[in-house]
Image (cartoon, rainbow, N blue to C red; front, side):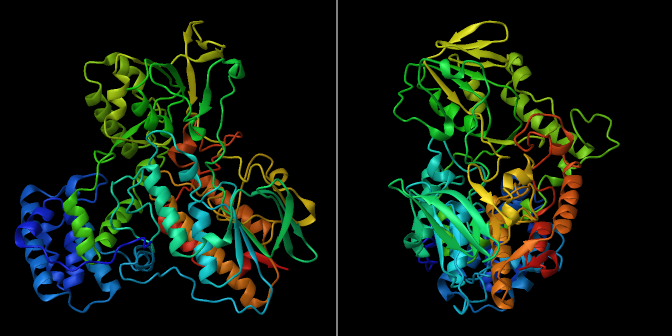
Length: 639
């Protein structure tokens, strides 16, 4: 199955084109038409969006600007229909400079242009595909652990380079988190135009933010399109990986579907097990004493019928915010136990279908999906990062970390106040006291407020003392009865590579070396573990700027560069130098202390048990892209 449909010729009549334009996102359509027609004069200054503000309808364009832009687009679409698509007259680089100048008032700088060409792939090429091929002269085999988003990506690139590989997947199918998380309402909180591979754009997403099943189907389609399924061993779990220092070979111990254990030898291992794949259950007295059904949201028990039941949900993170509004209609009573309130970012289209006119334009206007993705990308390259930066002189660090952060607080507070007008009791519970972006900001279209205001829903902020066979006891010694308990308490994010045992040079165990404080060079390599590469490793989580798929593509490009370096230079293995690793992590730690999530004391999965931010990347996107374009041989000792 093809992931993206081919651009179709325009045969619609004038009325149909006008109707489609009613659904157009104009700040991306005008650039697409300028590129496809070669007429950069379409980028009229008087039609320029006033500000690239995330979430602003039509980029903040006024009604008169929108009307003029639609008229301009109508004439351009008619010309394409009647005369066809002309040959390109400008380079992609020239188009990027002109269009970014129109979108943002200032053209993208020279340092951004290569990144944008690579990330957005505004032509038909795949700029990140490896430019080299394995010649087969030196024995080399790669084991990829995990067939989720990052593992599939790694497999695509390794196959394109011609390197023999196998993917080990513990589940019965691909998809990782999108296979495992089947709770009601599970969906992505990044627009699908950005939460998708840069080289595998799908132009017919049914919704702006796709639900779990649609995303799972996308990744399945990628596996089929790139011919990977025969290289994946399903229902097979990696138990351990050990490095043979004499032979420079990894021995990967796996448990097969029939329960046997066997070893696979490889010159390199790519771990794509992610951060958010091991559910975390809270340490609450009596948790195992509950007499009714109980389960974590990531292991949803679909055999349990919630209709008419008294349900207790412990935790109010991102998953809970998605499934609670879905189950509230069915249950008799719903108790929500909230430890920390969330900030919500308004996203009116969060549950919306992509309108028919917009879908039609994606399928009929060359480059439109790329420029739509570009708009999202350009908004995200810095995103809210400046507002998440600490100003040491700011006088109220408990509620905000800077003036910009306080302005975001004011806007998000207004959003909550509007939703809870007339309900000061709920607003007092819902309004966070900590700085915005110190914890994950949740995406919301009003569904959460509608849910907690229901008569059968009770938002409880008292601490939990214990769980009994019959329900939950809070700090005031009140026992609230429950028939079912659902844990929406997140994941063991800082326990990287759990439960595998990874042994490197000198027999050192990676978790013993980390001692509860996982670190890596660029989040990818660790001293004493040659040719062992991690994807979505320590300090590669994105908080306010971008899509994790962008980071995965950068990481895989770096890993492919390492494999090429090994094969081209005839090295058997490369081991990150300790001094390089330590200096890098010192920079990362210092930068994270200057972000809201590092400065605030609020509880968060961004920090490990030692209180260090082990998850998050503190910089902008171009910084990470620049450091992962290619490995620097000086950073490694070669064996």
